[in-house]
Image (cartoon, rainbow, N blue to C red):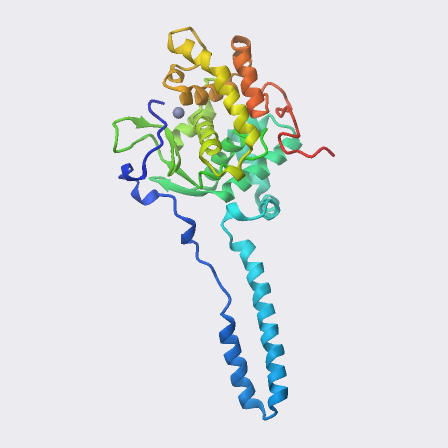
Length: 338
Ligand SMILES: [Zn+2]
């Protein structure tokens, strides 16, 4: 995946100018009419109705009060539904995902089972967790399609790659990236002549759909662009995202991985034989993303050849792909013991 990852300054993304992350200010709020209007209507009604001024004033006050109360209630009800997704309560997001799962869960389960071997190998309980997280992730993102027709299974499968990556973690929404771009096949950006299968920038996560599918179709060659880009996305989310939206302990563990992986990365650069794709020697970020591809697609081989590095990724992601139950520490994964 030559040069697949760049943090692209906004002004340098010509050709993608209309794909910038839309700001929260774009949200249209449906507001109740201002109380002043309600007051005028009541006043007109009162003038036509009768002469008793003291009674009228009291009635007016009551009616006005009722209107204010109704508007306040209506406003509150609307707000939770119309808030930007990232600002809704976890309960509201989960409830919406559960409703969607009731309606479409069987179809999503079929798609994920057919395309994603990691999902297929999970127990029933873990599949349920995976499916609900996938729906929540898909709901949280805006997907933009380039030179390709949108189909629902694309959203589910790409969200599934993100959920697989973060399956052992409490936080999984990668809030730093509200937009995911799906491009029909490999693409180029104007500022270099590289061909991209995927990249991550401040404008979003970009993935070539044909390479995404190929990555999961051969789940033993340690090449998986979906997992590769999600590995970049999760590390950028932790370092660049809002402090209160991610798991500080994960950030610490990622820094520990950098310390442990550093000497191995330097040895690879100097030409030591290794099982990782050569692209891992590009820089440490690529080393991390290539490690993730091998970690999921060839875990036994990875563990046998680089046990220390393998263990450090297990610790970091709180999961071990060689275990049937995947997740190592339920508490870290946000699973309540029953
Ligand atoms: Zn990369």
